[in-house]
Length: 158
Image (tube, rainbow, N blue to C red; front, side, top):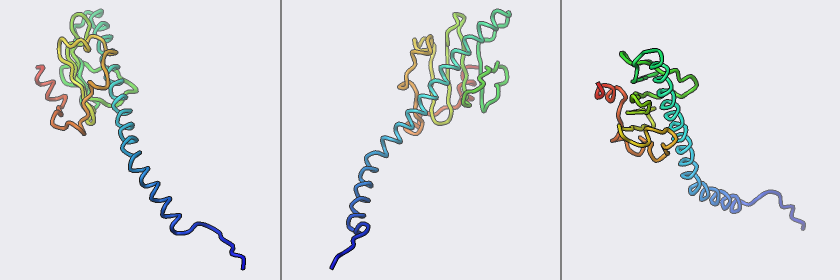
């Protein structure tokens, strides 16, 4: 009698499923972490763009005899009493940035709800946006106790 065997046995299918499940358990955390790091990197690039634009705009404002040194955006809108930067093409990030008379960033607070960064006066990284690294960005899913709002920081600056 000739046995015509087509397909896989139940045991073979279960073995393949078990192997795939084990691979998934080990691979999934790495994939998720890679996705978080990519989002963090995008946030950092947007913050660097905000810093560069703020310094550039402060120079333009100073050449026009305007003394604007603090720029702010909350919920996509400007803040009362502060100028707004034109950041067309960047993700909505709430921020307040103060530019010194030497045209360096004197203070920066920025958040998008997932990540945040704060640079205080005198921080060498505030002078050059390219010195910022991904380690400077706070992941709020890991450190929710550090969360701030730009409104709080704006009020603290006065």
